[in-house]
Image 1 (tube, rainbow, N blue to C red):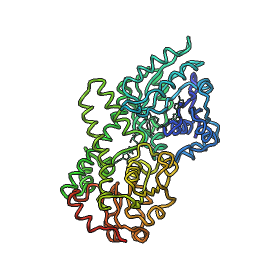
Image 2 (tube, rainbow, N blue to C red; image 1 turned 30 degrees about the vertical axis):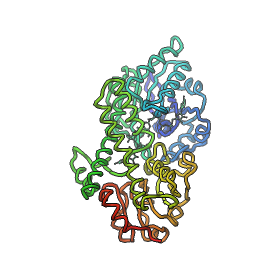
Image 3 (cartoon, rainbow, N blue to C red; image 1 turned 120 degrees about the horizontal axis):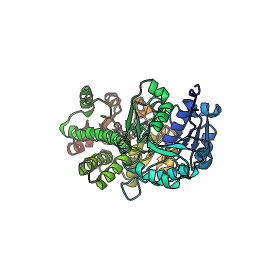
Image 4 (cartoon, rainbow, N blue to C red; image 1 turned 45 degrees about the horizontal axis):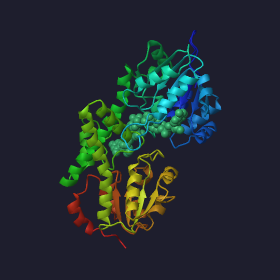
Length: 466
Ligand SMILES: NC(=O)c1ccc[n+]([C@@H]2O[C@H](COP(=O)([O-])OP(=O)(O)OC[C@H]3O[C@@H](n4cnc5c(N)ncnc54)[C@H](O)[C@@H]3O)[C@@H](O)[C@H]2O)c1
Ligand SMILES: O=c1ccn([C@@H]2O[C@H](COP(=O)(O)OP(=O)(O)O[C@H]3O[C@H](CO)[C@@H](O)[C@H](O)[C@H]3O)[C@@H](O)[C@H]2O)c(=O)[nH]1
């Protein structure tokens, strides 16, 4: 990758990225890939050490190569020393976490506040602070006040928002080729700097929307709220399908042909999880309530409730499948990550269900191709296996909770020989049910099985093979 062109009067901006988690590490590596000099800063020395050595501290396809290449080229460095990073940079991206506060639906803004204050205090020359973290509307204005308070006299600094829409598992492509860029609260100078940084995707046709600060903040959480609503909509319809004997997957295909609706995010099943959608709709709920925007509160409450109900639905199916109790029954759980192609287990529906079954006395054995380490850190008391075969050996029940290719392409005839009970709950509607049926399995999917009452009778016939 060639270095960005230097205009006559303006050298290429040097970049610091504060927070090198799933968002920041990807952003830092991608900006270096675009040719900029980038320094990533994190308070976690373990993460910084790994990154310095050219390794990604988490699983994200394509990211290790990007980090390795740019660290080797000398364009990408990492440090725990914020002052050092700020001193050698002109544009500072805030990429720290905004998790749900404990005991509240509000976002915890202490990390973004500390980052903004820290950057401002350490500025040695004029700069641009660019917020990328997902924040409640109004945060940017608060941070501007913090920055104004902390910045040394005589230094000119601007704070703007440039929300990030990347998906885990596709983070590298999404960052290098975003489907849109939103610049919030920018002066003409700040807009020009951002256009310079994103020159490549813009030249490739990526649309830029220049907005005021609150609109830019709200675009991000509204996008996530819409995606969450779409998932909960199809999951509500899945419940109707269960009751009516209809097939939600086929229904979603038919809906998806309408371009006004689209097929994406209409996969019914266990619902959404991860480090973004659940906490972002809750933070929006909380903020909307503060602002007196009650329609949004009511809508998002329903979205959240429908979503959490899906986890209970899988637990109920497992109880029914095993005759009302899971006590001392061995359950092979396939999947721990909140979705495939990541090792992220933050608010993972899969692990949530696995833990609930474990609490009810089941011997749960979890297998995930990438998320074993992250899962084990969070739920050390669950059983873990090194392979799908090990997880299913002797299982009374099989539960598929993350749609990894390894599970969707598995040979059901081979697996049948390992288990004690040939019932599989397909929590992600990802298996070829007909093929599994032909191999002698009973498949319970999400939105394609009869309602629970008749299901109880049906399941009597599905007594575990002993
Ligand atoms: N993960 C995603 O796919 C994604 C996508 C778009 C937006 N976001 C948003 O980006 C933000 C970060 O999310 P994430 O998933 O990367 O979280 P993360 O927890 O993986 O990373 C946050 C990082 O910030 C570091 N940190 C905290 N305080 C710091 C400070 N004062 N200085 C330096 N480093 C500090 C932490 O040690 C951690 O490594 C959140 O607001 C999230 O909603 C995430
Ligand atoms: O039809 C679907 C699609 C997704 N999901 C689930 O929804 C969750 C979220 O999936 P996805 O949106 O792909 O994952 P994230 O990487 O969390 O990305 C979301 O959150 C990011 C952080 O804010 C945003 O940047 C992205 O645009 C937004 O898609 C996962 O548990 C999926 O299993 C479904 O249940 N059904």
